Length: 98
Image (tube, rainbow, N blue to C red; front, side):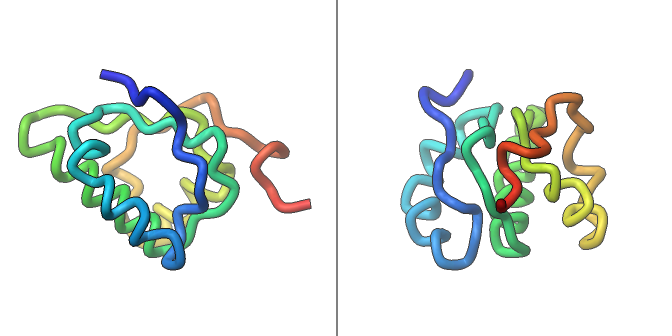
């Protein structure tokens, strides 16, 4: 199942209430399109970990589509990189602040 639209807000503490309100719908999806996400912080990472763990209960992986370039270094810093399969579609310049 694919999300009908990409996540567009930053995955940050400030935007968590918006995503949290949608978690029932989001957590039923096994793909997260992050192509429009320009910013992610530790709170956003924790949200993705919880999403991943929710799917893992049914032996379904969470696939991340075009995560920002900062995603995997942040995930590795917090020791949760293994929850997310590496992807070859990282978005370097499009999602980095100018």
